[in-house]
Length: 319
Ligand code: NAP
Image (cartoon, rainbow, N blue to C red):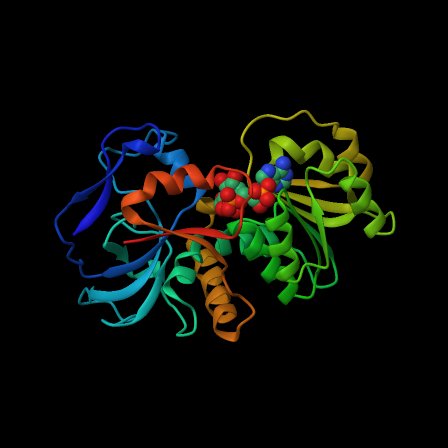
């Protein structure tokens, strides 16, 4: 099979498409024939060498969708021929085949394309965990999705709307704001506009927002604390640097600053997340948005694109 291999940490160009041996499942494992692969920012951090435990060479990727090719003798949750999406893979997903634990494959409803299926795992699991398990957001609350135009943001938007929350979404480009509007956000703002924080306060009748899902905390955490309602919660999903805050802003509001890292979630929490996500995909409340499909051989281009501004849903690789 063909797979992207990384032999040294570095820039996008260290990813090379190579011929590698086909994969065989162990007793509890599943091999998926990959039709589409989700590209996540974390893939770029790992490729640059951010995790000292990652051993070279390796195949990047945790998100994919495809068809079950073979299963181990103890696997009962899926069968050969099933359409599935993955939530991680032992072998990495930037390849024609992916070896997964049986718990890492989830049935993909017929009406969700493989490209959309590849856009499910990290974005929807992160958004679900941030919104429900960490912020404990409830119907009727006002949620600011600070960075709503990308993979996690669109997922959070769909989850919050389906749960009956009022959603304010931000995007930095016109096409991003068009997407967030089209997805049904109640209010859409430009996170580069000089007055957008005042607009948040106006939209909430001076009260502020109950929950903020923050995609770039180093740029925004200080601002977030000033637009939170009493007992508001800000969940740090993404951050690429340091930030100075005034703790009094949190103190005055009994506000909570909550960090979250998807990979810290316990196995039962992950199972619960995928049960909810599969149900949402099946009943139509969740519908991933794919902005760009790029051939697997051009994985370096996908890694450059995901780190650029002007997000529009997910970037997906096609083997
Ligand atoms: P993505 O698809 O590349 O989207 C990035 C989002 O951040 C876009 O909506 C982008 O908006 C927005 N953004 C850029 N500059 C911003 C600013 N100044 N203020 C507010 N938003 C801004 O990435 P993603 O997959 O959605 O992931 C988002 C972030 O969460 C990344 O940093 C990623 O590493 C992190 N993440 C963390 C976890 C975790 O477990 N904690 C899991 C998944 C992702 P525009 O492009 O429209 O400006």
